[in-house]
Length: 287
Image 1 (cartoon, rainbow, N blue to C red):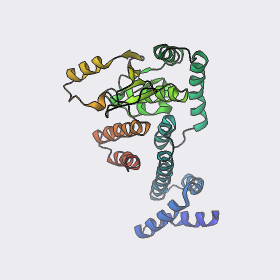
Image 2: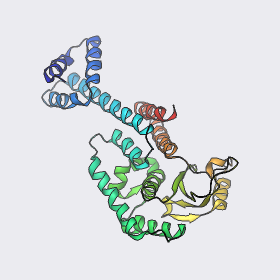
Image 3: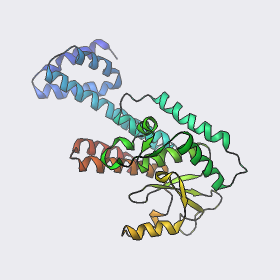
Image 4: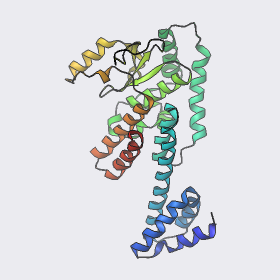
């Protein structure tokens, strides 16, 4: 990419003609992330509000397109849960440090790995995960998660040690999966939970709950419970009894639930631009 071409295009961004601006915007978007340092320098060296606003919008466009392309590649991959969550966080936090985030997660995973062995029962393994996750590393629930979107993002969870039900579930399940502990998400309304499914017991007769040994609630320090507790919860919340409330989700489905939560939050707050952006990301996974 010719830096002089980028600089020449950027200089034209102060043209009051919107048609010219839109044409330049398209060209800079096509240039991708290579244009961002040039745009940032131009923003810093200008005091013109229109010029700065246009640069901000173009940088947001480029970043959003980059995330979309990465999510498309993730959708075609084996759907590593933590990688998906990091991508969604990266959209909200463009300066997210991938290496530091990975290192923080690897430290938790290593601490679990040291204590785990193949001779342990499923419950014994989860007891160890709970100890490392909630006691050693101090993760806990964010009781005000409905008032802030930030508790849904994995980088914020790692930084603050507090998160929403789905953020805690994603980090917990993602670490388990990387250690070959068969834990998956379960889309229970109002409290995304997890299940431990014996991989040696296949689902039969379209019943995905076959082989589910027990359920785990990361929002309540990893407490273990059974199907009857879910049935009671559904009754108390006056919800329709659906099979999906008991069945494990794929990692792709878990990320779509995360995105749906963000869409709902921003819609409720009236931020339709953010809501539509997350909806657009979700469409990549649906189709």
